[in-house]
Image (cartoon, rainbow over all chains, first blue to last red; front, side):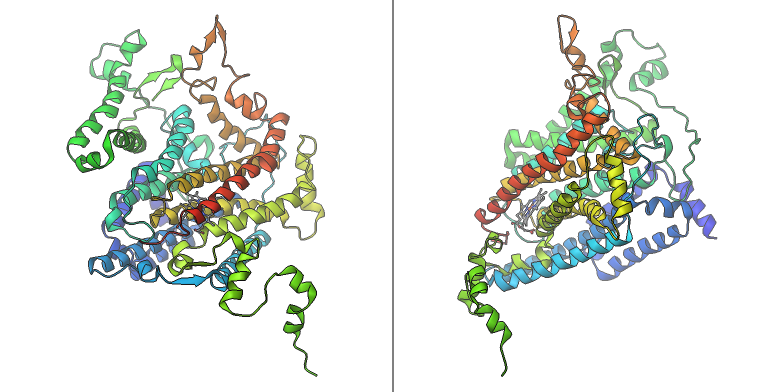
Amino acid sequence: MLESFKNFLNSVSSPVTIFTSAVLVFALFVTFPRQATSKPAGLAVLLLVLVFFGIGLTDEHFRTIVSTPDNVPIVGLIFLFGYFTWYAMRKAVINDRRIEKGEPTVEQAETNEKVLVFPYLIFIEFVVALAYAVMLVLWSIFLKAPLEEPANPTVSPNPSKAPWYFLGLQEMLVYFDPWIAGVLLPTFIILGLCAIPYLDRDPAGSGYYSFKGRKPVIIVYLFGFWILWILLILTGTFLRGPNWNFFGPFEVWDVHKVVPLVNVNLSELIFIKWLGVGLPKLWFLREAPGILTVLAYLVIPPAILAKTVFKNVFKKLGAVRYSILVMLLLVMVALPIKMYLRWAFNLKYLVAIPEFFFNI
Amino acid sequence: MKMNIGKFITESQLYKSMFRHGYSTSERDRALSVMTNVFFHLHPVKVRKSGARFGFTWCAGGLSFFVFLTLVVSGILLMFYYRPTVEYAYNDIMALREHVPFGIMRELHRWGAHAMIITVWLHMFRVFMTGSYKPPREFNWVIGVILLVLTMLLSFTGYLLPWDQLAMWAITVGSNMARATPFLGHEGPGAALLSLGGIQLVHAGSDVRFALLGGRFVGAAALLRFYILHCVAIPTAVVVLMSVHFWRIRKDGGISGPL
Ligand code: HEM
C-alpha cells in the first residue's frame, strides 16, 4: 500500500509535473486569498505537508537526503516561509476587508499611538532574541556540522552541488548555459530587486499589510520567490542526483541511471526537421531564426503591452521606467518559457553559437 | 533588618557609574535609559505602536543583526583554532571536533550562517509584504539588497574553509560559473573578441575566476583568499552597510507605518 503510493509518486514526479502543479497551487493561492488564508485551509495544508514528511521519513532514501546536515535548514525553511506567507497574506486580507468597509487598517488604528522603546520594544526584542538563541543552541547540540573526507581535487563527488542557497541557480543550468544561469540571471535578480522601489512608487500600501491594492506587484514577487527561487532550490537539492539527473522523492540515486540526450537546437529543428535542407554553413544564417525570435521576444511584447494591458502602467511610469520594468519581467518569464520549451520540444538552444560561447 | 537589595545595587556608586540614569519607572527615566545607552540608542525613545509589534516586523531585521553578532563571536573563537593553509585547515577543524568536549562553536557558526540567510530572506519578505520599500525608504531597500548579497557571499566564502570534499566541490561548482562571465570569463561570450595583436587577453590564467581563486582551480591560494574575504573583507563591508541601514531607518522616519 505504502510502497505503491511511493512508487506512484515517483512515477508522476518530473520537473514538468512538479513545476506545473506548483504554479497551479500558487495560482489558487493568489486567486482565492481569503479562502486560502482561513485557518482550516492553513491547517489542512500543514497537515498534508506533515503527513508527506511523515511518510517520507519512513523511506530510507528520503530520510538520508532530508537529514543530510546541510539540507536540514531547507526543510525548516519550507515550514517557516510557508507559515509566514500564509500569515502575511492573512493580515493583508483582513486589512483589505477593513479598507473595503471604510475602516482604518489594523496598523492605522495604532499608528499615532507611541510607546516607549524601553521597556516596550526592548522587552519584545529581548524575548525574541532569547528564543532565537535557544533555537540555535539546540540545533547545534543535536545536529553535528558535517566534515567529509579531506579535499581532494582528483576525486569529484557525483553529484557536485553548490551550497543550497545557490542551488536554484545550479538548477537553472539545466535550461541555460552558465553565462545566463550563473551570471546574467543573478545580475538581473539583484538589479531587479534594487529596482522594485523605483518602479512601484505608489505611496498607497506602504507600511501595512495589504493585497488588493498591490495585487500585480505582490503576485510577481511571490511568483519569483516561491516558484523561480525556492522551488528550484528544492528541486536542485532533493530531486537531483548523480549527473544532475532527476529522481523522484523516493527513488534511490542510481549513478548508472541513463537518460537519453535528445535535445536539439532551434536551428536543427528548423533547417533539418522542418525544411529538410541541412544546416547552413555560416553561423549567422544558421542562427538567424533564433536570433530573430529572441529579438522579437524582447521588442514586440513591450510595444504591444504598452498599447493594451499595460496602457495605464506606461502612462504612469513613463518610457524609461516602463522599458526597464518590461525588460525585467521578460527576463523573469524567459526562465519558465525556456523550461517549457525544453519539456515540450526537447529544445536545447534557441541560439547556439558555440564559436563565441554564445548560447541562449 | 530588611535590606532592599535592588535599592542597594541601584544606588551604589558602581551601578551609577555604569548606567547614567536611575531605575525608576517614570517616563523620563525610561526615555533616559534609551538615550544614555549606546546600544539602545540605535532606537528612538518612542516608536509607533504598530511598528513595534512582533506581528508587524516579525523582528526579522533585528534577528538578522542578532544572528550576525553571534556569528562574529563564534567566528572569532574559531579563528583561534584555525589556520587557512592546505596543510592545517582540515586537521584544525578535525581537532576542534575531536579535542573540544561538548564543543558546539563550529555548529553554532555553521547553523548560524544558514539561519542568517533564511532570516535575511524572511526580513526582505516582510519588508516587501508591508510595502515598506516605498518612498522615502527606497534607498534603504537597495542597501538591504546589497546586504542580502553580502550575506550569501559570507556564507559561500565560509563554506570552503573546512577544506573537505563538500567544501572544495561546492566552491568549485559555484566558482565555475564565473568562467562564463561575458567578456571577463575565458568561456564567456565575447571574451574571444578581447585580443591584442593576436594575443588573447582573457584566458584561464587571467579571467575573473582566476582573480577570485588566485589560481586555475580551488587550491591553496583560493583557501587564503576566501579566508580573508570571509573573516575580514566582507564582514567589514557588512558592518559599514548595516550602520548605514540602521541610520537610514531613523532618518526615513522609523519603522514604516500607514500614512
Ligand atoms: C544583514 C541583513 C540585514 C539586517 C541586519 C537588517 C536589519 C534591519 C532592521 C533591524 C530593521 C528594523 C525593522 C525590522 O526589524 O524589521 C530593518 C528595516 C528595514 N530593512 Fe533591513 N536588514 C537587513 C537586510 C535587508 C534586506 C535584504 C532588505 C531588502 C532588500 C532590507 C530592507 C529594509 C527596509 C526597507 C527596512 C525599513 C522597513 C520599515 O521601515 O518598515 N533589509 N532592517
